[in-house]
Image 1 (cartoon, rainbow, N blue to C red):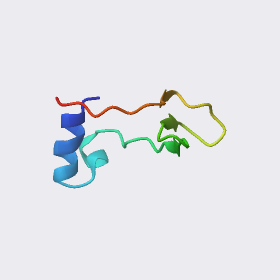
Image 2: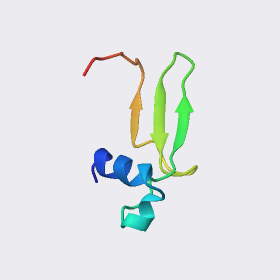
Image 3: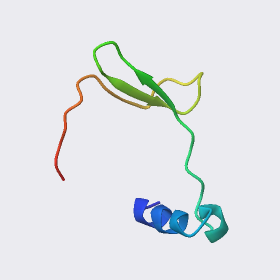
Length: 58
C-alpha cells in the first residue's frame, strides 16, 4: 500500500471507510545508544532495526 493513498484517505475520515487497510500497530524499542527497532507484537523478534540513526535528506 502506498503512503499517499493512506494519507489522502485519512484526510477525509477513517481510511477503512475507503477500503484502505488500517495501519498496523508496531512495538518500538529504543536502544541505549539511540538505536531503534520495530516488531509486530511483544513476542516477536524485531523485523527491522537500526543501531546508528543517520539523518538524510530526500
